[in-house]
Length: 137
Image (tube, rainbow, N blue to C red; front, side, top):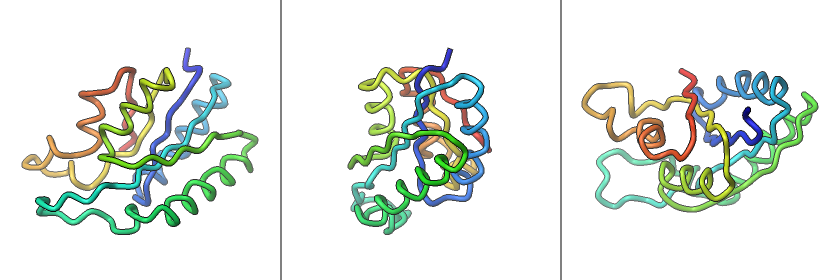
């Protein structure tokens, strides 16, 4: 059913909490796991400053390899990808390009209040994704 699972991750607590769900799904469905981190393109007009660490290719590389090692300890081989762009659009483009069957991601702080819900990465991915999306709170 879920042959390929895409797990976009960043440094958020919510992404860390989604790891257990990803492990369960990959093991249950014997899925191919793809870990994706997006080097965020800074938005000069944004009122909210993005995580500057997520704009560093070196930090993203360390994050991905650390996650890959964590999954390897559970017997799960994970492919890693690093892309640059706007996170929601990049996640959906990668899912489409790789014919992913499921995107699993943590919810993130921006979407917690009603005023900014439409701006959250998770909300945008839900609306743009070419496949089902599982949001782990």
